Picture 1 (spheres, one colour):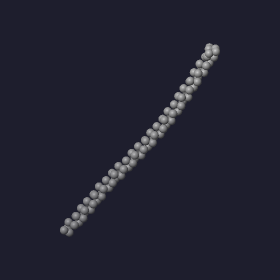
Picture 2: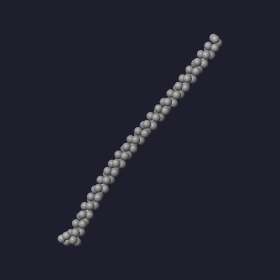
Picture 3: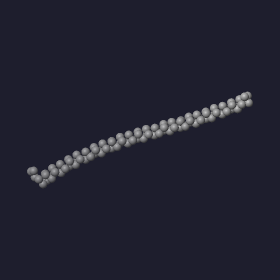
Length: 95
């Protein structure tokens, strides 16, 4: 039994080291997966923030375009009224 004792201890040591190595590989894999997930989350949050900013900028551009349209429409209406008034004064006489 004494002869097998060092062999058993060596095998136990080898088994232990292999088990630790496997656990370290698992830990490394899980850490890499965690880091990848964190990176993906940060990228998606950045993308969402960028999309929100783009949406806000588009809404602001649309509001400015609407204001320009309304201003131009109002100016066109005033111009049309002034034209009609001028034409009436020029050609209409007392109308």
